[in-house]
Image 1 (cartoon, one colour):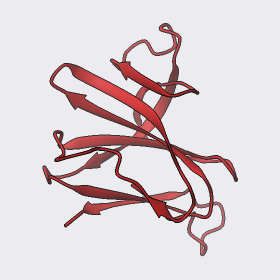
Image 2 (image 1 turned 60 degrees about the vertical axis):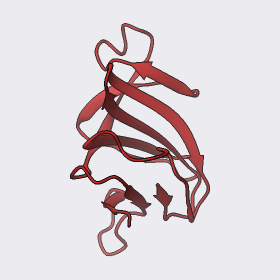
Image 3 (image 1 turned 45 degrees about the vertical axis):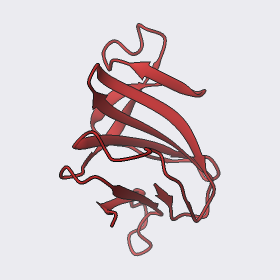
Image 4 (image 1 turned 45 degrees about the horizontal axis):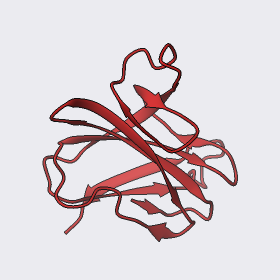
Length: 126
């Protein structure tokens, strides 16, 4: 995961393992840094990302809803988040195409389009 912004960013991941859905977080990335979030080869085709900008506000979010919380977490299951005492956040789906390594880059909103949302880019890492 690369944070290509000037801000400090909090990142959470969602994925499916042999036991079912898991969400975990928070990884805190300083501006203009990269960090390995998943050690070894990727075990899932799809990963899900939700991130927040601590310094300027805003978030990188999507339409795949999963459970999160404010403090560090590992949560099993994506159902009934609120009833189980968790927050419900929208994650961005990343299709790795079954690659064994992948890099996700968080970027600032498009400068040419005022009000554009933050962007996320993903590509195989070689």
